[in-house]
Image (tube, rainbow, N blue to C red; front, side, top):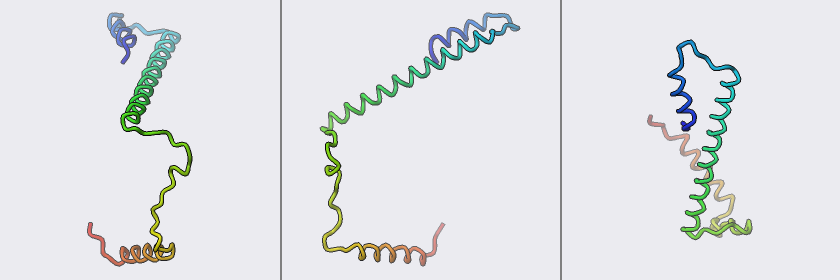
Length: 102
């Protein structure tokens, strides 16, 4: 909670029991708390962003310059797509036949 909100809430405890803020005072109070909360969230976001950049710098991470940089070569040359699909079907069929233990 912000220092402003804490001070304001503590000061209300000294007011008479039948005291109530005017609608304008209430609105102004909550608007200020909302602005302070948004500012705090923005500070946290900035800090997290800075920490991510620092970590990337420490690890030597570089920006991606081309989509080709992300392209992998993971498919075995001696295996066709049809063989892969047949393997997937076999695994799924095997899973259907095995009883589940829960």
